[in-house]
Length: 319
Ligand SMILES: CC(=O)SCCNC(=O)CCNC(=O)[C@H](O)C(C)(C)COP(=O)(O)OP(=O)(O)OC[C@H]1O[C@@H](n2cnc3c(N)ncnc32)[C@H](O)[C@@H]1OP(=O)(O)O
Ligand SMILES: O=CC(=O)O
Ligand SMILES: [Mg+2]
Image 1 (cartoon, protein in one colour):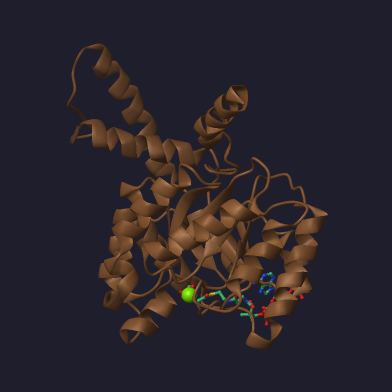
Image 2 (cartoon, rainbow, N blue to C red):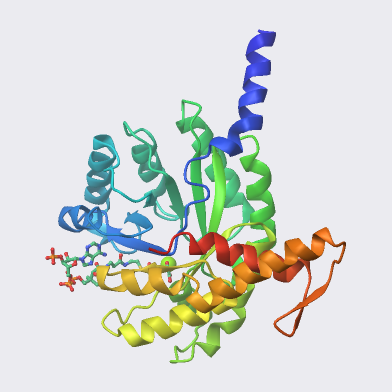
């Protein structure tokens, strides 16, 4: 009995180290409608960081059951192996719908669990509490699952810090790990009655707030979707804006968007050279006992050094 309790505590303590795909990049998060087997098969052939098999808004109301069952049949087959590491997720329906419990039950009782569950329209921490207890009941093994939360309404933004605090706290004793926040800009615009413009100025505050809170909780920040999927120049521009704000990835709806997004969320050669040189210089100055120093005409201290470390980490994904 004591042995079992100690073992359980040890497992929980070590849990974070064994969470699957916690540190995988999610530069492009591509939606694939769950009821469309052809698109699901196609997604497995693409060089994309993250596939989100969708039960939610990409699926018609009269196809919800079909989507859930189709996704389940692919999960039962096991995640197709590829040369590159990737994240296989399922976006369930929102917790205020009649579908979410069956969505979650279906994918969490599959022969092989998805890496990640994506939870849309999270408006407050009670939703997270409900989700947490359901996940705890459904996962019968010691496995854990990643959770990504969507913030897509005015209320959700008001409650954002509380949502993240409660999620972080519940994850300590549950079977999930909170890994990211998604800015659901389309639902957000509908919710606040914003009129879309090319510059996206109307959602600038929310877009920045999401990054800020994500970074405070050490989460990945996934940017808005670009629905004019044939306009690749516009997509590139929006990716670069998001990357400069601190976003780590972007939602994608079409395979044609993937290479542009994945490239945009990598550092440029110039940035890599800057960061590598800075780290070398930093280590030399540390040895000499100097905290702040000058590099290429700019004062450098710890925060800039951490930014350089982020760049070098991402650069390792460059082919
Ligand atoms: C705000 C939000 O919540 S966004 C998320 C919800 N929305 C979605 O999930 C939409 C996802 N995207 C799609 O359904 C589609 O891309 C559409 C409907 C926009 C356009 O689809 P199509 O008309 O089939 O596009 P198109 O003909 O250019 O597709 C080219 C190829 O890519 C495939 N494809 C297109 N979109 C996807 C996708 N999302 N995933 C996988 N494959 C795809 C097509 O099946 C086609 O394959 P093929 O060449 O082997 O025949
Ligand atoms: O779910 C995404 C959105 O933009 O809404
Ligand atoms: Mg949405």
